[in-house]
Length: 286
Image (cartoon, rainbow, N blue to C red):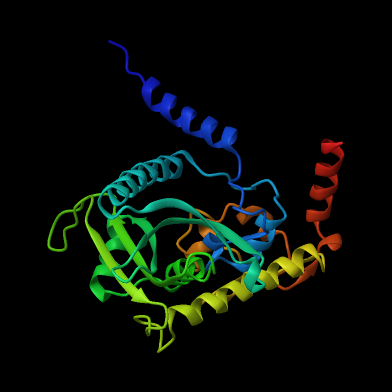
C-alpha cells in the first residue's frame, strides 16, 4: 500500500483551473463598479476596476471554501425559487441614478403587497455566524449591498431580505449546524439594526456614491485611491497574509503584495508600477 494525495491534488487543481478558465465575473451592464464592492478597501476597489492581475491569488483552501459556499448558495436559491417563486441572479442597473454600478441580485420575489423584495444570501463560517447570532446585527457593508440593489428603479422594491447561512458545524456551548440561518427583512426606510439610526436606503446611497467616486478617480483622473478600509481608516502598513494584524481585510486581499509597494495616500498611476503593468497589458493585447 502506498500513501497518496492524488484525490486532494486533483480537486485543488480542478478548482484552480476552473477559476482561471472562468476569469473575472463581468458586471451586469459593463459598469466599473459592482454591488459586491460594498465595504471593500478603496484601494482594492480601484485596482479591481483597472482589471490588474492578482498579486496574491486565492490559495487552495480558500478556493474550496468558496466552492462549498457556492454549492449551498445554489441549493438555497433553488429552494426560494420553488417555494417563493423567486427570480434568481436578477440584473441590477444603478446608472439611471447616476451611479457607475451594476450587478446581479441573488434573488427578487414579491411581498404580499406586490412590491419587490431583494433577497441577498451570505454564507458564513461558524465563527462569523456566531458573532452575528450573538448581537443579531448584520454587517454594514452587506446591508448596503442588498439595499443598493433595491434602488434599481426597474425592481420596484421597498425592502430587503438579508440571509446569513452557516456553512459548517461546530460543537460545544455555542454550537452551530450547517444550514442554519439568521434572517433580517427590512424596509428600505426603516432604521437598520446597529447603524446609529441610519436607514438601509441611506447606507445604500452612501456606499454607491463612494464606489462611483472611486471609478471617476481611477478611470478619468488616473489616480490610485488611498489605502482606506471603511470603519477602520487609513492603513499605513499592509499586514502580511499569514499575520494576525488588523485590518483583517488586508490579510485576505488578492492585491496585498502589490498594494504594499504603493504609497498609502492617493497617487498618480503614472508614478507607480501599476503604469508598467498597464503598458505591458496593452502590448500583449495588440
